Image (spheres, rainbow, N blue to C red):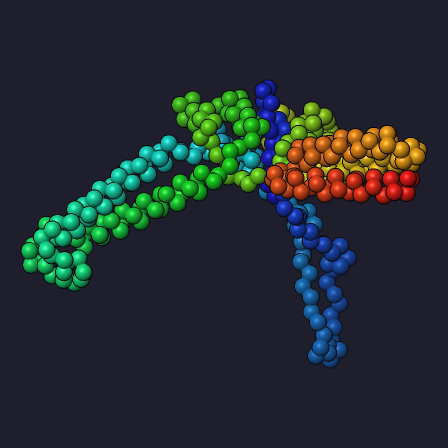
Length: 357
């Protein structure tokens, strides 16, 4: 299970996390752990089954080890413990400028070798040595006989080595570009914690100030923005009941700092799912009720029909806004969902208009 927390200006505060399922082991009670009475050998059948009962107490099996921030020595050990305490805090520099410099130098080195190879090919063509361009073995033999200082096959070998190095850096740079930028909430949390605790010297702490060059190792969630809003609300509502509901035992042991607390991602996701379900239910029921009243009690006249169309437009806009705010839906997915929602309401209007001519 991984968890995350955020910080305010006064100090480290509210976490955001992501979790996986817990393993549950049923521990037999002490009566079951009592040794069974001895059975004579003649009473044991050949098809009898044997089972192994672990002689362990339940608290020993459920015991977990949690690395506390305060247990780590001040300095890089504590900074590493903090950054690794949650996926959202795995913020590091991408060094995009240095990647570009290295790629430019390698690119020029490969280009220089390419120019050298082209010049050698043109020289052989101008001297009438086309046979060397048509046969690799002949080219090697002639180069050995003429004792060339830099034969063509050596140039190509250098090109191969340099291309492999260039391609490797190019692919790594492409992977680095695909890394996501951290959310502003996560960046502020890490920077505030560094400012408050000062685990390392100022000169080496300067990496966090390169905001445009900071990348995160975690992948974005479907509704990470809305999750952050929910967690911000939970942070402001911080009380014993909130921590009891949204914090696991392991999260409470992560730090002794009263200004730092974590939320269980699984429980936050449950709350977010409940909120989204309620929003969808409201956006589906309210327009149906409103249009039913307009088309039924308006006797299907033209005015009531236009009023129903107005309700349709308003709730379609609300649905699109909810989709954009609560999820990370792409543009085509947003258009498709809005069109389907609008089509359902249009069918509802047309059905009631035909019933009440």
